[in-house]
Picture 1 (cartoon, rainbow, N blue to C red):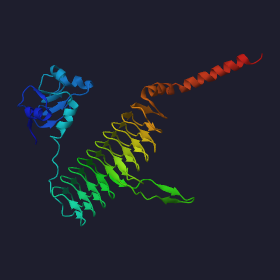
Picture 2: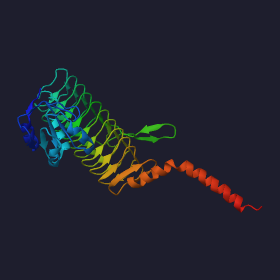
Picture 3: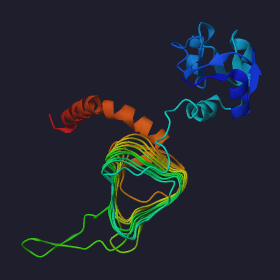
Picture 4: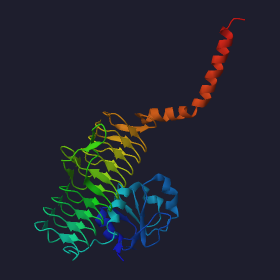
Length: 344
């Protein structure tokens, strides 16, 4: 069991200790369930009622919240960010470096750094380059010519098609399929002629890709995922999509081909994005947003039928519920108008 004093945690976070710096912490927990050996955090004001009665050994708080808790606390400007950083101290250990399982299949000429870890039944084809500190989980497959940057983690059963490039410090979760063929077919009049997908998939540093997500290679040119992009489970990005730095894409989002997404965007679950459009930097789309045209102004957008500024959509949503009542009123008024206008 990992054990840290509050003083050690404060040093790690750059926080101020309010209370006993020698108090020992072994785990993290929520405010309402934490015990004296666990550390918790408060970032959302709606959880403030839990703070008073919390039994946590310490709580991450903003400096102006110190008086709200009688126990130990770690004071810092952003408790949620502190929680995120602290979580890594209590995470499970990574597999040992420099271990290649005897069942791994490595093609002649593949370049594997001595510090890389390859799990059982990993397949590495010719021309692949695996940098220092890379971990590749069991049953993962890297097709010909792939490259993986330093300290990137592939969980079990990740599949990389040919020539996929992944940067440093990335995390790819199980079941992800990267660099597969895009959906390209030309009609012949009776059937379909497949279009060979000749481009690559390039993934920059610090990208995380969720379980069972599929990202297609380019048809001509490349599909490109920018630095620090975070992609949830069950997302599909089609061929030649480009995603800007620091953008977050949550579960079950689908992006059609040749769409360009800017930096610092956020897409809620089940959002659908049409192909061959551009979305500028700083766009946020709420869950199930349907984007059928380019967006050139930053802001928060929602949609039920078509995309609108979020404030306008909320007003329309109220009126949607009133449509039947309004329809009946209009019919009634039309009937009265006909009676008034008809000759006696």
